[in-house]
Length: 391
View 1 (cartoon, rainbow, N blue to C red):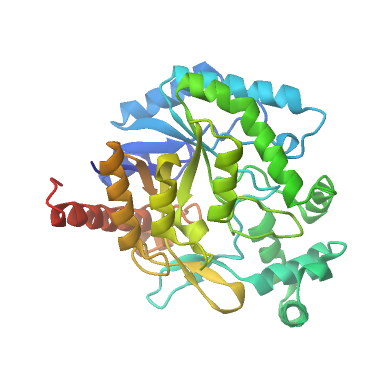
View 2 (cartoon, rainbow, N blue to C red; view 1 turned 90 degrees about the vertical axis):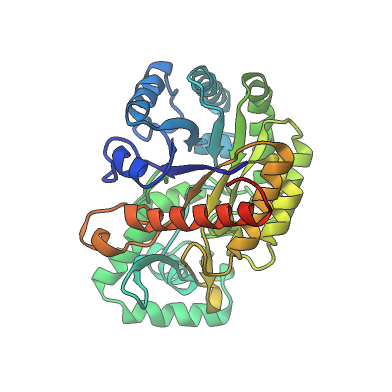
């Protein structure tokens, strides 16, 4: 029993075409109705049109990434009931179209965050990178968030001040755009003024309260998901720690174990992202697959290389700190044990070769992901063969 190989596609405006993805060896597509505003209903008609387009290319769409959780649900705003109703309607329409895995995240305001979208590697390829000092420089001296000093130690503040002083206006504007203007798959972008106002909506919401709000959201949608046969899978925080004074509550094994204990519904599941969890050295990735396996409904397979001072960059899929071979051994063991093929996708490939001269979505160029998919496919088949199983 091998993983189902998929790639993410951002819809008709994606510079990577469906036929490119099929030629790369994937059998499935992971996508969303990115044109629909957060909090609005995904209609059955719109879902069916997108699914037919994908099927016409010889591919299958069974995994949504993502059905956005509106900020009003995360903060339990006055509009909570209406937004929950819309979320439930969208799930019902997705199930009617044969889509049974729905990815979401519960990160306040920002989705995945990086400080450099084209960091040059020694071989000339480009990778995504996160640098904690650059985040502090933006937070302290561009955003000027009230109370930001309390989020950083003295050494980081000093390093951030030196970094900011060394940047010209263009570099400062580029850092601002990179952090808050919206990345592929992120649901919203901001100006710095808008971002400050949005942060204010989380005043008084600490980690405990955000966890309670997450539980309330799941208690409202999981019973319906159980009936529909949908697996709701939460994507872990990226990066897996608080940022800009905002709490994050899906960063560790303990975080998600607590979530499953509080909402034990079968539909309450996990998108296991080896990159997001792998930023933290205290997350034991193969062990997490073994212990959380029955909750894993979707796999993001990528690796990060941890650096000094809280920085990290996207490594090769079989390199970096993930220990991908051990992870895939654990996934194969899980697949055989449960008799199911878990959908996976290679995540955040390098920009390389001809894609260096093309317009691409950061992290989602074709060739870097194709390389990752080929490496992961070969790794899994080699593991299966070595265990005497057909591959």
